[in-house]
Image (cartoon, rainbow, N blue to C red; front, side, top):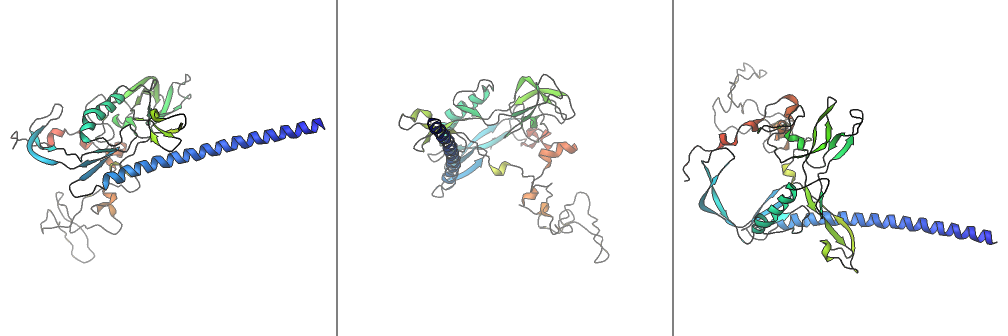
Length: 358
C-alpha cells in the first residue's frame, strides 16, 4: 500500500508540475501578445494624434520614424543653402516655429512627443550621439539595436567560422557599396541611388561574397532605440516607475517606417511619363505617318513626348500619373543591369546660379 500510495503521489506531483509549466508558458504567451498589441496601439495613437490636429492652422508631414506638425509661419528672411564643397548661391525662406510644432516619434524613446525646439536642441543631438558611439559588443544600457544583423556562418568558405553572410532587419548598409561588393571610398552614391549613411565595420568578421570567397569587413548601420518597460498595471514607461507592487512584466522597442518612403516591388515598375497633351505641337502630342486606320506607325522625333499618339493602353499602369507603378525600380535595382545612377550628378548642378539673396 505504501508503494502504491508513493507511486500515486509521484504521478500527481509530476502532473501538477507539468500543468504549472504549461500555465506559465500560456501566461507568458498572453503577456507577450498583450505587449505586442500595446506597442501597436501606441504607434497608432501617435499617428492619429499627429494627423488629427484641430483647426486649419496646423499641418503635418511624415517621415521614417516620425511625424512633424507645423503651425508657424514662413518669414521673409533669407537663409543660405549650402552643400559640402558646393556653391553658396541658393537661398530659402526661413521658418518661425510656434507652440504647435511637435515631433511625434513613432520609435521607442523616453520622450515620445517633444516640441520642435526641444527636439532640435536636445533630443536629436543626444540620439545622434548614441548612434555615433554605438558599439555592437558593448551596447548602451537601456537601448537595443533593431538593425542588428543576423549572421550566418559560412564554414564552407572559411574553416575558422569568421566568414559570415549578414542579414539586416531594416536597412542594409551595403546599399552604399559598389556592385562588386567592395567598399565605396568615393563620394559618389553606391548601388542604391541617393543612399548614404555613416557605416561602421566589425573588422573581426568578413563577408561572404556572392561569387565565393571572402570580402570586406562586415558593415554595421546601428539603429538603437530606447527600451520601454511594461509594468504590471499596463503602464508603458521607463524602468524608474516600477515598484514592488507594480513590477516590470516585460519590455518593448519599436521603429515605424513611413510607407511613402518605401519602394514596393509588387507595384513599382519603370515609370514612363505621360500626361494629357495641352498643345497641338509635335514635341508634345507627337506625329504619325498613318495611311490607314490599321497603321499605327509613330514618326515622332526622339525629343517628342508623343502623348497624343501613344496614350497608355489598357493595363499599362506604369504610364498612368499617380499610379504606384509609376515608381521606378532602377534607383534600387538598376545596378543589376548597369543602369547609370542619376544621383552621381552633384546637387550643385541643380542649384540656381544667382548669388542674389532676393
